[in-house]
Image (cartoon, rainbow, N blue to C red):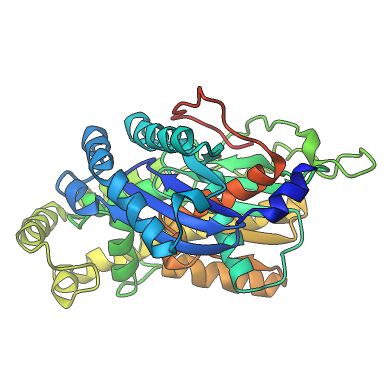
Length: 403
């Protein structure tokens, strides 16, 4: 019996496990398109005390959470371990210790249940979160190739996504950050201004109260780098469909400069004292969220204008690079994923630009924008169908690349 025939007789249920950073997550997804459960144990409150993720603490919390989170995901899905077809787990990129917790537990489950193990790239998972939800909504599949922007606290990448002749997903990295990721810049600027962690929700909420054109931030030109040729992006005739960008067509990102510009603005405009006062008040009132009236009242008009201008510039840079790359590479649709994809201004401006260009665009739901395991199980389904299982030696790959 052929592998595809065997697959058709199976349940299509895959248990996904995600532990790449500061969220322990588990989910059960059917055939890559129907999430039966999606459980996330967040460590946000723990790491907020330090203004960022502490790797050792993250690993410890994953050890505490992984068993009850997996159990909750199975119970929510209403399935037994014997019903599963495979176990999928994030193998990278991410924090080494955090990844190892998920991988070790997934390998134990795989061995004990005699189920195949599938290693999944975290970045590919973010892309498939959007594709899965599109299938759940029974939307028409977007035409290929797709341009995917994966933008989060740890990553800002542009990938050209297509299917190989064998039906496997293939990715070509056509743009990346050369320093800070966009989400990292949000976190650092929020901390610099005395706001809470993570910084994204704070910046997003407060930016609406300021003038986005008050501070004219600019992004400098990034020196071109070599882009790998990828034969997977060839037409059936063997002719390459896409040429590499020229020296003038660079789609990389850099956000360290704007972070420094915000710091310089704070220092030259005498804002340091107000920042420290705000920091102390928020530390005494952790219950005040980004959208609370009390938190907004701590920010004067100059601070709100600075926040709005920062966000306007970052979103504008992401938008320009993404749509320019889509045009050069002939993308027939755009997928935006990752934690920063939850940003309201980003969604509004990207949607408006896509509408003007009559270019399909898709975002994940807010629940699937941040790290989760449903995206890992969804990305594992094509690998399961193709029989691409992980070896017993699967380990953590903190710097794992996609494409």
